Length: 291
Ligand SMILES: CC(C)(COP(=O)(O)OP(=O)(O)OC[C@H]1O[C@@H](n2cnc3c(N)ncnc32)[C@H](O[C@H]2O[C@H](COP(=O)(O)OP(=O)(O)OP(=O)(O)O)[C@@H](O)[C@H]2O)[C@@H]1O)[C@@H](O)C(=O)NCCC(=O)NCCS
Ligand SMILES: Nc1ncnc2[nH]cnc12
Image (cartoon, rainbow, N blue to C red; front, top):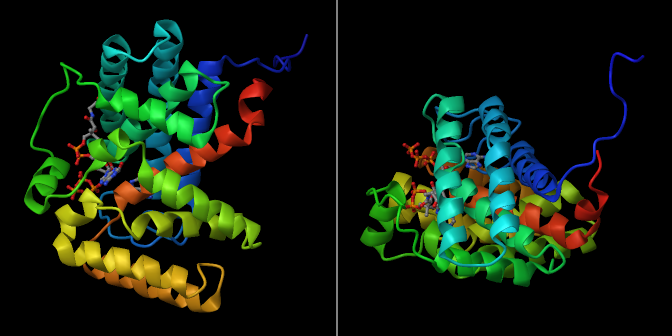
């Protein structure tokens, strides 16, 4: 008799989706060098975050993602019952995150974006084109959860002050930053042979060129947002993160954003969403079902 059970464990669809969501969060956190964000080099513009905390937070969210997928499978259709079920699980996920991080907001936006996307895939796993997944997630996000608390969050404050879209609207529009920016750039940079890490950095930069990231706006106002958008475009125009010139621009952008205390946390969440969708779209992850 062996001390360990060496039989491969067959995972349910919900477990597999939770694995993929957590993997996407860990890959996003590990990707380096990201401008002013937590990565393998350090904490960027943050004083209360570090890589270990991002990993712990990502792992603590696994049960919430699994439960959101299970709710989608059980309820089986887009409507208020599913919207309110995943809203409740999302709020519990936020509590699990805050308990793990001692009250630090590591992944609030990611729970929202990935939660909707996990549910959207679980509803129709065979419909795995990026646009179709994003559309189902948008239809869920458009439903009004009667139990959603309406605090004057950082995002709510700056979307009102500057008249921009925040995390809620990004989801309701079907994640344009992911579908129209990040995924096409990821594929272009891969096709150009830039290497996977550079392709992911370029995808992040593509999001940053246009996103109204409410974390940046809250911390650094319009100056911060313009610096982020123009600086990200400058890196891509210089040849992207795989080129020497692009790397120099990326370093400059990192320094500028840190000096402004501007952290593109919303863009980071959307990169994780992009990596999640990319793996679903590539196909074999869901069929495997075995670790
Ligand atoms: C609908 C909600 C997303 C709430 O949105 P709202 O805008 O009202 O609330 P915020 O608390 O501001 O959180 C939004 C988070 O979304 C990310 N984000 C920002 N801009 C965008 C954008 N344009 N598109 C998409 N996503 C965006 C961002 O999250 C990341 O940044 C956080 C770290 O930032 P940091 O500045 O360090 O932290 P703070 O604590 O805010 O400030 P400091 O004190 O440190 O300065 C980190 O969380 C990243 O993930 C925004 O923070 C949704 O959350 C909601 O309603 N939830 C309720 C439960 C529910 O229904 N869930 C549904 C389950 S699917
Ligand atoms: N890598 C990161 N650094 C800071 N905030 C984040 N929010 C999500 N990912 C992040």
